[in-house]
Length: 136
Image 1 (cartoon, one colour):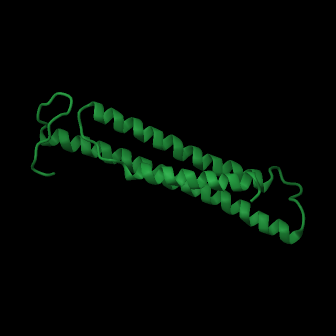
Image 2 (image 1 turned 90 degrees about the vertical axis):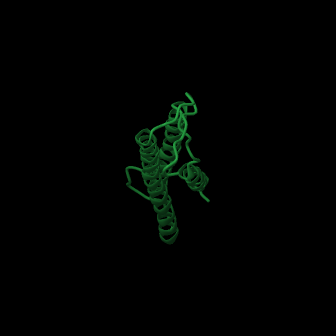
């Protein structure tokens, strides 16, 4: 890609190297932001599901319910997992809007692998959320 001038898809005029590199830095910045949200969402989902399974095993061993807690461990796990899924979905949508905006300005934008991974992680988060809700 280096050394070759791209043409703007909107105007058809050739882009100079500094403009092209500016667009590429912007695209990569949005991708890094999505990956940061992916890491945060995955952590929330993992933490929530781990809390749920830990207390599920612990309560079976004790043979009862969590008494005296402000919030039930199961509901805490549901809230954490739902927050993780929500953050992944919102971050993926935001990244998509950024990419569309850059495309409208005339730059070719490659497919985001981060969006694909984020979508897959959101699906896994939904499965973890269903497991906590339906007590699987």
